[in-house]
Amino acid sequence: MGRAEPVPEGVCELPEDVQLRGLPWLVTQNALNAVFAYLTVFGPVFLLFLDELGLPKAQIGLLLSLLPFAGVLALWAAPIATRLGRRRVFLACWTARKLAVAGLLLLPWVMHRFGHAGGLVHLIVVVALFAALRSLAESAWYPWMQEVVPDRVRGRFGAMSTLMVTLATCLTLAAAGQVLKRGEGLDCFLLLIAVGVVFGLVGVAAVIPVQGGQPQSQEAPGAGHLANMRQALRDRNFVVYLAGIGCITVGTLLYLSFLPLFVKQALGLAPGVVVTLESLVMVGGALAALLWGYAADRVGSRPVLMTGAALTLLIPVGWLLLPRQAPHLVMWCGLLYLAHGMAFNGAALGAGRLLYNDVVPPHKNTAYTALYYAWIGLVGGMAPLLAGALLQASGGWRVSLGW
Image 1 (cartoon, rainbow, N blue to C red):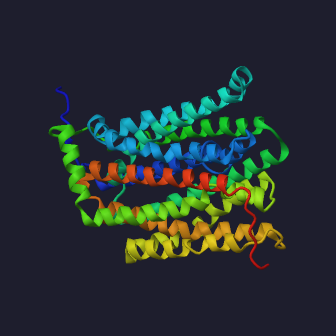
Image 2: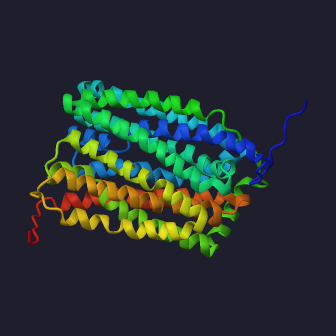
Image 3: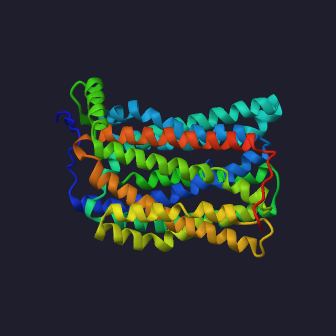
């Protein structure tokens, strides 16, 4: 039996019944990956972990920016993943990034042996390696997801995935909050990171049954990919989409990047309470997920995206006007987290559906998704850097407005 020839790029040979059988596994992977993410390098646990290490906000901003900045690697990684097979590249890099994060467990030994400076170098290396592997994996993930999720149920799949991710995240943050309330020091954070790595590896196993993502042929791979990217950048619809998503990303991350530290330091809430409150973002997203998903499949992606984005703009105003001395402060913070989850979920679901269904041509998705992922990484990396620098520069400011 001869070796199977790779299919031309963008050709999907998966019948819809095969696509539908893979959806439960994708949802399971997304939920388990949420546990991994919120216990390791995403979410409030990691930010509080860095604060516990005594890092200044500028250094924290630098570390956080490494994660999205690595997205520019997708410009080179995407065509390689297409030729090698998106599924196998995703599985390999998705597994390796979990092992990279496990390097954080060696941090106490490194700091004891080489001091604080050595620990900082170790931390930067671990985060940078994780960021690079994540970028390589997700450069294969985005076009693979366009192949394995049917367009007609993409909105409902996104809603169901959000519900399961929300449940997993809420349980994770509630448990993490209890661990941080009952313990102190780095040991609590290292325990959470170890548990997160285990869940992440189980999540990789869950996505193995999903089909598709086979090696695809390209004529003159380097020149062809560059030509396709240049053509994509001449696509006005795609460029306008990138501009809008870029502005939303920067504006949102500017205040979200350090929001847990604001709630802890400026409003005076304990770290365990801060972590628990973060779960309300996911609760808000879950409450609105089915409505947003149904609306996206019925009335289209653009109305859902614009409505969600408009509502998201109102949430920072609430944080700005919330005084430290407000009665029932935890309740008000919880309501703002909840409202953000509801609004942001609509914007994210509408943006994702619009990208796959109306913006990215399936036969050229390697170039389009590479540019999209790299652009999101670039603007997403600028936001925490800018936020950290602004906080560092304005640390001595004291401003009050009325009550």
